[in-house]
Length: 195
Image (cartoon, rainbow, N blue to C red; front, side):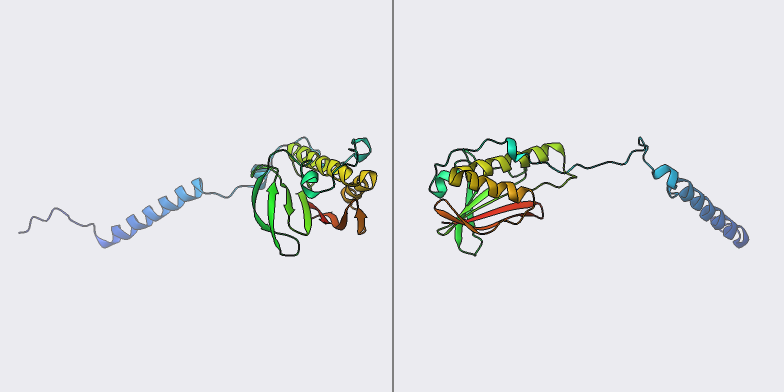
């Protein structure tokens, strides 16, 4: 006579027990992991579609500085007082120095200075950017506008105004430098001056 206390239920009861456990697990999963219905995924709003306004650069009201700077360092002073520097390459791949005038978490404003070029690059905001980012981009554009005014007065500021309006800017002499490239596209404005 054996004293086995782990008596197993008969096979017919075992299959019903397994089926009941599987059914219970399926019901629990169905109740807790059901798909979201379309009505639950819709966010309530006021019914008006969000309208994103593009940035408007009112260059007609911006003050221009008198023509005064003749070298790249004098022009870069208009971009900001303090800049972080790091090695970089200029537009043509030559060794240069990058002067960043904005913090790492902010939209970029920097100048790249090499033996032959001065490049200025700043953020060109999208209509979907927040107001703070748009305001920073306008401030950066004003700094470059002032810099170009110091380089060649009204002719220099006209270059920045044309860039911001998306117009083509022809190569031209500006002060003691020559405009090589000036365009705003793909979230950045780039201005390249040959010394």
